[in-house]
Every structure is written in structure tokens, then in C-alpha cells.
Image 1 (cartoon, rainbow, N blue to C red):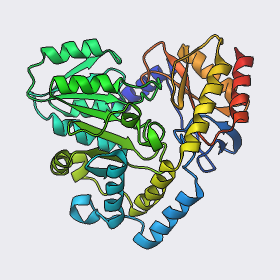
Image 2: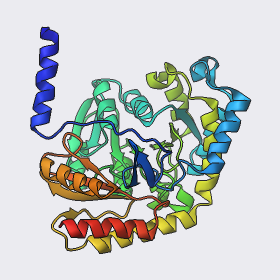
Image 3: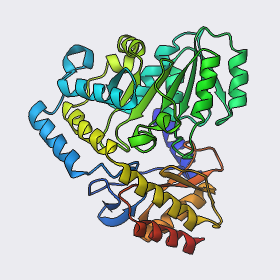
Image 4: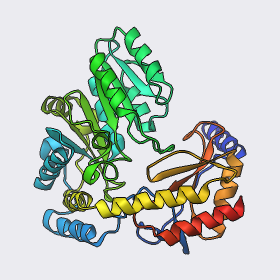
Length: 386
């Protein structure tokens, strides 16, 4: 069948370039010690940064929430699917991040698809996006009919030139706070200053900073000393450091009201199960009281960086749980990941198109649930393979 031929050819090309992917089935809950397809592994591959994904208090809250509120919400938020736990969670998230209001979403992808196309819907508008933004932010910009400008990663001088040259009706600056494959932070203070100077919205995706950075885990804005502001729209995911699932958008009263009326991925999506909101309320409590977890994670980051210094691969400078080890070649990155796998260590090999060509890497993801001995084992294995 001709329809199938193109798909077969494209898959063959991916295989030739070392870009094929496969699922690995976990037979145990998310955690550092994972049973993967029947084999016990020490995992450095998840985004469970605080080790909350299998926390007994959260799992109990999830079970209790299901018994009280049922399995599903039954409808979109604006129809009949906005249950009391959803409302309480939105209020707590807004208060925790310092914003006036929040909306909750089933995934971070849906949350990002809600914001940018709503704020910049027409050809008279313009979006200014970091070139290393997450795929969901890129797709959100493509859904908008606005003019798109992508500036080199964290290059504020280039962004300033683009903003100064723009005559757009509405300007929207869009950035990750912590970049998911490099682990570095956006210069949020400088971005906010540019947004102020050029009267632009600043949309911040804090998927990898929420719960980990800032006082009490309030996120990257708090980490950078930037208070909530009417021109800032904050997105955070709840399936990484928060350990459950879903996402939220926090902003001013006006912006949240506007998104509730305009954001298609909010209006036309069934609300997440209310039990998830109950579980996330417990997660928020643990995040706020999690300074010891964050301090332990910071110590593990320092231990890993010290142990990998001087190896033939480049460890990107990152003070977050994301520690990228640049290998370069796709096949070499896969070979290194396979060699670690053979020793019972699970580290993801990341290749294009997720990262630029020639920068294939191991994305070492640390968690507060790891121990010093866990990190020492990984370091020793990489030193032996160097």
C-alpha cells in the first residue's frame, strides 16, 4: 500500500540515523529503584525531582479522593466537570505562587497550548521565543497566527533588537524557566525588564523549576526574586516535582478570566479526575515543607558534578536536577547508555530532534529520593567507561 510506504521509509531513515525509540515497561512504581521489564535497575531517568511520585501520603490521598469523588470528572471545567477539589487546588496554587488566580489542566502540553495562542491570536501580534523552548511552547506558537521570532538561547541582546524592531499590536515573550535538556535557567530578571520596557507579556514555563527552586519550592520566579506581576503568565506542571500529574496556569484575575473564555485547550477538554486534585493538595503541603529534600538534592548535584569533572564528555553547567552529559554523536550516546544499562543503571540517551544535531547526550536526572551511594555508583560507572 502506497500510504504505508512513506511511513516505512521514514522509519528506516530514523533507524539509519540512530534515532529510533522504544518504550521500556516499568513493573514497579516510579522511583530510583525500578523494575524494568523484569530487571532491577537504578534509575536516573525520571522527572520525579523530589521523590514524591510514590510518596505514601500522596498515594493515600489519591485513593481517598477516588473513594470520595469518584473516578472521573465527567465533563469540561466550564460545563459540569469543575468539582470542589479542582477549585481548592486552583486557589492553593495561586496562593502558593503569589498570583491572583490559577486554572488547572490535564497536562502541561495543554496548558501551554492554552496561553500563547490566546494572548497572541492574530497576524498583528508577535511571539518572541527562545530557540531551546520546549516542544509544547513551539507548537503553541505555531497554533497562533502571530508573527514568530526565535532568538538565540538566552541571548538578551538579540531579543532586545527583535522587540525594538517590532510594530506588533501585542508582544509575547515566551521562555522555559529551566530548560529541560540543558538544565540551565533563563535570565528571568532581564526578560522581565525587557517585557516592562517593550510592554510585552512574559510567559514562563516553570515545568522543571516548580517545587524545586525558590523559597519553599515556589519556583523559578521566586528563585530569581521576581514577584507575581500582571504582565507575567506562569505555567507549572504537576507531574514532575509535584509527583502526580496535570498542570496549572497562574496569572492576574484578568488574564485567567480571559483564558477561561478563549483558551480552546481549556474549554474543550474534560477536567482531570478530582482525585488527582486531592492528591496534589497533599503534594503541595509536602513541597512547602520540603526544604530538607531540596537541600539533599542540591548536595547530590554537587557530588555528581565533582565526580564527573575531567571526563572526556562535557557536563553542561547546571545547578538543577537536570545534569546533561554531552556525548555528541547519536550512536556514541546510545552506546554509552547501553553500557550503563548493562550495569543496571538507567540513564536516558537524548538525541535529535529533542536536542540539536551533534549534541546527543545522557540526560542524568537526579531526585531527592536518590542516595549518595546511588550517585557514587553512577559516577564510578562513568569513570570506568571513560
